[in-house]
Amino acid sequence: MDNQKIPKPTIKRLAVYYRCLENILFSGKASVSSKEIADELGIKASQVRKDLSYFGEFGRRGVGYSTQQLLESVSDILGMRKIWNVCIVGMGNLGMALAVYPGLSKSGFFIKALFDNNPNKIGIPIPNDLSIEPISILKSVVKERAINMGVITVPAEAAQETADALVDAGVQGIVNFAPVRLNLPDSVKVEEIDISVSFRSLAFSISLHSGRRRE
Amino acid sequence: MDNQKIPKPTIKRLAVYYRCLENILFSGKASVSSKEIADELGIKASQVRKDLSYFGEFGRRGVGYSTQQLLESVSDILGMRKIWNVCIVGMGNLGMALAVYPGLSKSGFFIKALFDNNPNKIGIPIPNDLSIEPISILKSVVKERAINMGVITVPAEAAQETADALVDAGVQGIVNFAPVRLNLPDSVKVEEIDISVSFRSLAFSISLHSGRRRE
Image (cartoon, rainbow over all chains, first blue to last red; front, side, top):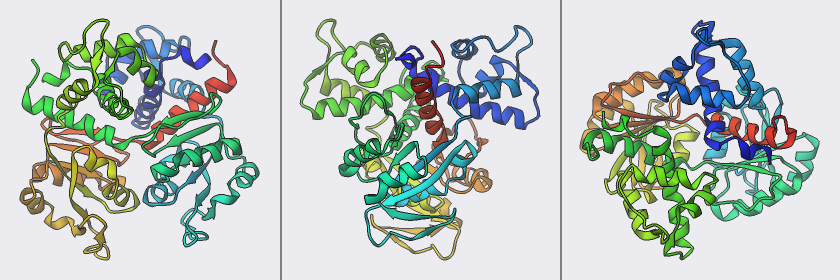
């Protein structure tokens, strides 16, 4: 597989570079160096240069990168010229939060359908012209609206069957918020999000800082 | 600063190792090799060994690690023996989702207070014996309940003033879900969560896989 060659941390960092470059462009800077990106994100400049080098030569030594061009290259690499039609399965609080999260459509991810099994939720209107539909019609809706990405926000015990339904309907990728590892065919990519990981990482930073436990 | 010496990606990976080790222990395996951890997470075994080596010698060559001991060591490193008392500011859908997210208390993060400015939300009872309180009493509540970590789930434009209030109240760390970079004193650690980063990372994996655009 091609994507085996590019380390997963690099893929993640590219997505973070994207956000950083947006900020830099927004602040009016027409050019940017790997050191500036690195400083902004608290990583090494050599790491930034290495990550970008996986995709050919962008910058010129001593001059840096054109912010605009680099942003476009990174968004191209990240598949952001493609339109992603997204459905969310499981309309609890998290599903609702994602349904109205403005950052997603801004990044090219358009929520096209919301599903839930709870009959009391079916038909509830959501701010952005959507309404909640029953999971029983997931497959036909995914096909009709050309949905290529699914988000799982159901409870852990329902996550695998939800994933199976999404795969059967033909999505190319799944963002999984349920705290279980999904069994998926190789052709379907998954991104697992465990929010407690971020809390642990913060706890660790605080412990190191305040405790000075490692010299 | 001590934590400057340990790369941020290592800190993040340790939090991921923790979850992986929990799964391995749960599956009944008493010992585990760096290769098994690496395979499970799709990274290199040499990376796992290097990450763990920042904290002294855990494993024995050829034998691997005791799963239980390694889990305990990692949780110790991650500051998980400490009790984290958490407050959430901003009780929209995301705040609500976090307030009832079972993964947090399981990981030692106990939600002790929920704040919002909307008078209609004040007093609303939440499943786990909490209710929503006004932000005006944040400082006294944080002190009374020994809250040491704050979560920001307010809209972007209110994030900095919320952070200032949390810092003033004495929290040690902030998990920030608002899509803005916060200005914070060095003594307060922050973990920024941008959910669209995960969507971009998934989009990239799919593009690489399906397009075979880079050889």
